[in-house]
Image (cartoon, rainbow over all chains, first blue to last red; front, side, top):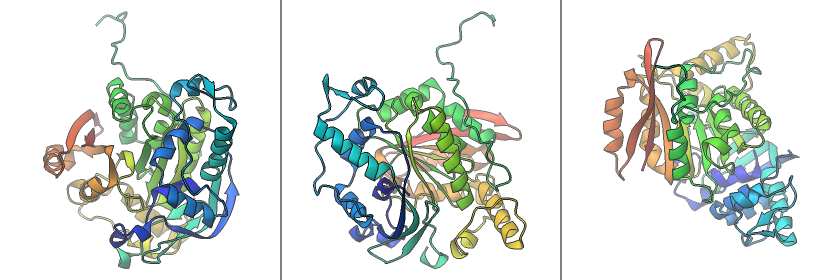
Length: 148
Length: 264
């Protein structure tokens, strides 16, 4: 499971859905791997507005990464600026190049969110304490019958 | 009709079907008539136009989720050709299935298809073992695809074998009694829909308002036995003004299959 995925899942127990403690689920005993993913700055730029940053900071911390406490302010890239990208290098934005600092932030986010994968481990609900297993990168969110 | 006439401008796109040649004897639902009908629905220019109006480029990146991915052929098609089918490739995708074997197979199907079409492919995140969308954060999904177990059956299979047994493993060439029982269970879950073939679909429709985002749309496959007019009446009668429109219909073998889009 990719670190980014944790931003889209919460405890499967129905009664937990309304509890703020059920999101994000907390990683435990995680074995990590880094898996190369094509760098897509347009995706990162259009994904940022919809991410729960506080939850992302929490998930990252649990896996040993430190993200800035506040959501980075990145220029919104457009498809046309994306089309102007050469290889996976220089990116044009409103006619200008992405600043060195922004590029560094994008690369860092790419590495942490997209390329960090939990191969084995658990995710624990902060509300009910149920532990979901992750096995060979696949999270198991099927609850036992008595919890449905 | 003249053979030389130009194809109508609403001719369906011809995009390559993802390969599933890595599936040998794993018990997953193979690409079938219903899967291909979904691919054809998404290839209609009218559907491409609908999706790119619903989820226009420049808006926050859409999340695409398929429930019951089986072989993964539908998700792989949408993911590999996102640049064409969504008009944008900053799309993230996830697959959900009750079968761990299906999830491992689907991961391969999507990854392979995306790597063959780097210029148009979305970003695949994960496959997860889940009953419908129960593991998702509420109201996150922008496009949901469901080819449900739709065959009317006298009995509706239970998930208890999957829920209460040991951690599922990948099944290939079942030999032991345990594997064979599991395979039977997984097989029945791929098609058996219980009463009117609607028992699983009904559960999803009940939760739909908690699953889709405001701009979200569900693509749902129905067969004639599901009594689509009754489903239509039910969906359009739900709170908050749902619309349900038929995208495509086809006679396949003894069945009449149709794909519908449902949105607010």
